Image (cartoon, rainbow, N blue to C red):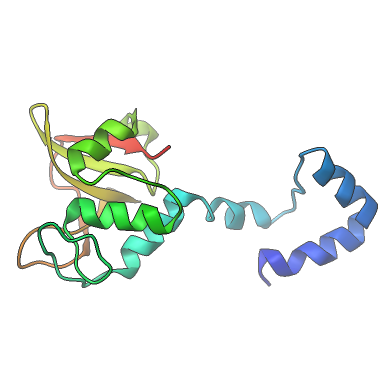
Length: 157
């Protein structure tokens, strides 16, 4: 049963008047089992799902989808479909995000690869030290382990 299917039964148990009062006051109904599904609906998690759905799409420099991507084209496309705007390049995307520590990273955050102060690559953090990204010419969109410590993390606002 999906979260949407459970809402009518929750309202019946709580009483329509109670549910309307909660909604009118800007509150939300909290029920066991709904939190994980609600959390999965964030723009970052949607973007992560969209990037994963592009598995196997060919890399093409400068491409922003929907069939071919470069690294920042994949992140731009994924977040746009999830309702968030990002600039075009990896460096511009880094400057647009809220910078976070590795300890604070969550699935759906952006991972920026850098050399010194220059950002040269971006992917979407998938958890467990892995990213979805469009690696390079001749490759395809794929899930890969982060291969270096020279990364910064950013959260799309």
